[in-house]
Length: 194
Image 1: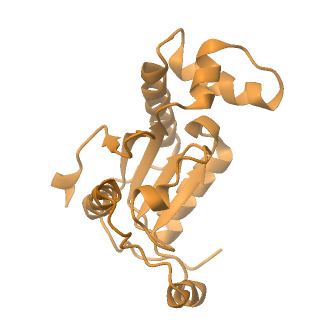
Image 2 (image 1 turned 120 degrees about the vertical axis):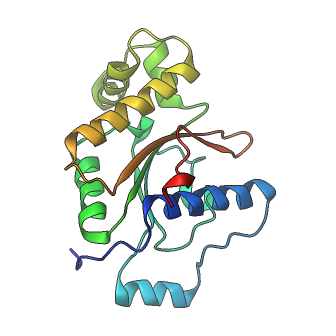
């Protein structure tokens, strides 16, 4: 693994970068994220310094680096269908907090999520069943897909908050991405944390 980094951004500053990045995306402005060859070289030589952890769905329409106008090394992204949380997800989050200095964890679901729809509408076997069973633990008998998505995000947040070491300087926030209009709605406003 890499050497430990001191936090470069507190949770409020990281939140501001995410919200400003999404605003740029919504306006169709060019990304202010650095994707250059120089940036690739610098991160290869000096490591990564992400300002936020984004736990989100594997859905190909949900690309946090684009949605938040971020560049190489800016976001530590963990993707699983239905943004479910397991031991690997927790280990990845813990690593980014402890060794990369990240102080903001976002669990982001999205509209029109196939995994949520599958969990609401039917029962699955095999590995897909593992995902839908995990989602069903958080949504219970909820039949409204949007409400089920929100309940699933809250469950994932609770797992992360309950299972990771308590750190007063790390903030956890839920969000939902609208794949039609491109907006991200956060469940909490962290601007006051700056």
